[in-house]
Image 1 (cartoon, each protein chain N blue to C red):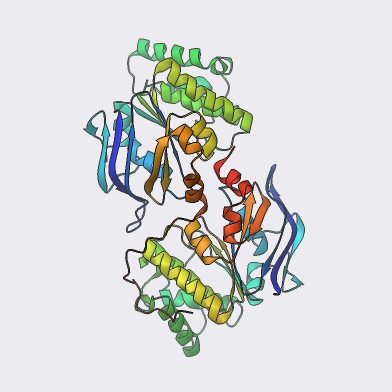
Image 2 (cartoon, rainbow over the protein chains, first blue to last red):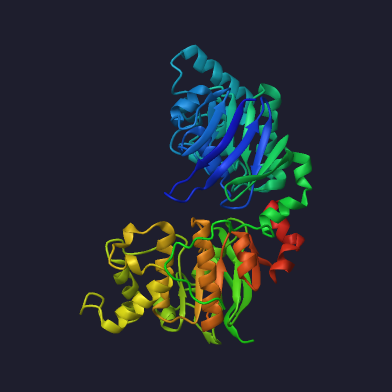
Length: 257
Length: 245
């Protein structure tokens, strides 16, 4: 087991917990896909793992160590690299400079060069465009650059937040292929959030369906793809509003119609 | 049943991105209608087109048969159409009570910073604050409210102008379950007792399916389905829109 979340609670506003006790596990060399409707807390799970958000409760075990609340730069040093949602490359820097930014914490020149060679080896397109400004790349190329930049530290766990967002279907396909190839070639473990649930599950080993801050379903990706309960979680039909708390925060309620 | 809002072939593009394309729908008077769709499907853009935040490139919007395309939000408020925003927009340093008075002043009764609050305005405002459970906060600055309370205040404030139709942009977003339940009861009551028409954008499907009598589904800016909650839930096109291909 590389990563394990135990009862993780986290949120952005006081009193509003986006994650209400999330449990999930990612094995070495697995591709795990997190899906779920808007506001389920998918990106928040990723932010809690990478240290961009401090959980208020729970444990996040990475290789057995509890890293909950650890700063993002420290989780990165431990081997967790996140590729955020949307475009995160530095648009005015060249492709090459962007890759070097990914290796800012490596002071050993030969190691840095070695990583550069590896990344250029994996993404031939990046060599061709190495002096181009990142902002001039297509959306799909930028996404590959961001993945390449995350690989510069040779992470053990790569976290991808909606890699296909805003990409044309054929480009999204190329990004998904790259993710699969990465795992096959370098044995990296991947945890990914994907809005296009079917595409995301199609390249994953396992999946979790998150809904309103809790993991509701877990299973083999191929099984989840055909599970009618997934549709229910997306389109309602489940008792979504928590009624267990009968107390009213307000002084007065009007008459029931 | 008569039509409150008629949306006819409305389109709007931003640069090369077509956010809403050729959308038509009727929002029936006295009903609670839900507007759903995956991220980026054009829901808020459609809200903005209806409420005059920006005009459509083509198409028209009518309120009770009268064309309102291109009218400003303040003019629409005067005609009985009000809205809330996904992210609340309040005057943080004004008191909760003063925030209630602002929309009334906007419709031109009196300059905003003129005379002190009139007693009939104040009593109406307090009555509404009581209704949403915020009367104990009336003299506190709005910034002291929790996010859920801010949403309730925004909701109460638009009730000051006695709207016939209310557009709510994610009333349950970022709000705790108890408050969501309260908000749903409030909407149901206002609809049942005062006949207020609601159009609601909401991602919390439990809320949509329980609250709405009719649901319209957008995907990539186009209307792909509409019907009762049960019909929409069973529609494979809707499922494809949400789960991808």
